[in-house]
Image 1 (cartoon, one colour):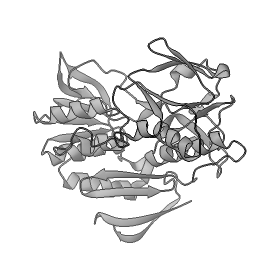
Image 2 (cartoon, rainbow, N blue to C red; image 1 turned 90 degrees about the horizontal axis):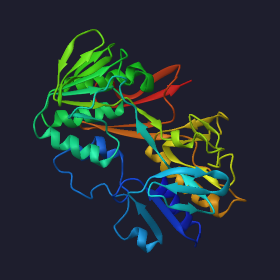
Image 3 (tube, one colour; image 1 turned 30 degrees about the horizontal axis):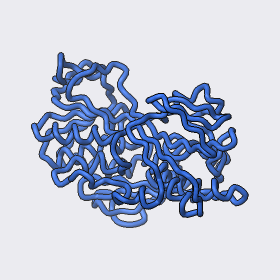
Image 4 (tube, rainbow, N blue to C red; image 1 turned 60 degrees about the horizontal axis):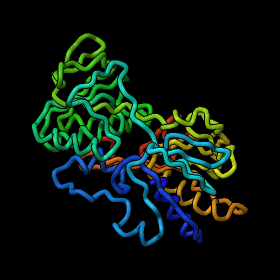
Length: 350
């Protein structure tokens, strides 16, 4: 979404030059949030998650270089190297490289073990659901709980393993997180908290999950939802400033002229705190791209996105929405509804 939004932002700002959008996946750009939600349901159809209409890129002069990864960057020359050996030099390079899923330390290569990051992951999990497997989800974050709700909607047995005592507690605070967890329990999701996963058991395919306390959970399908890390390892010697992501100023400009970053891998300076901050939200990625398109075309009048982040999560019949940064609040006050009604508004104060 960051890359496509940048391309669209360039055209909206009046840029008439050549735009090339490079992506390692062989399919046209698609939306990521549905992969752990709607894409796991029976009604999902090929093409449902496309980011733009089929003719959008041709109509706007945006060249898609699909199925080709970028493997190297000469930042000073603004030159990128592709996996097929081709090199491209540009007036501006935007790194919208996203993030990659974290894996278990002891994670054998077995059929039935999945993460959720790309379309192929969602397709594989949806196919596996048809065999009515016993599902174990490692990690009680948003991805894990979204997959749990999709699996329970199919009537599957689901257990979520969470290392802390409260899924989503570090993100939402105890009261809001407890309300979400209770909703899942009401829908039949089982939880194992305060315990980790030692390893996944099986010979060729998953047979179970061994917990850190020695217990074994039977499983035919394991989804690892341990969060993501910015996909920046290949940029270590690029000359760019790297921290928790590609470090940028508040306009998405890196320390090298003509190189920009946007989306999950980009740490833009937050004007409220003055610190580079990486935000893994769809809305932030879209806003990064739109702002960068303007900034590249009009460098004397750079534009920054709104500083208040927003995200949403669909679980069962509920849409959870957050405006701001709830983590680290000193006080959470119920403003409307009730914690156990699936209809409430909470105000976070610091």
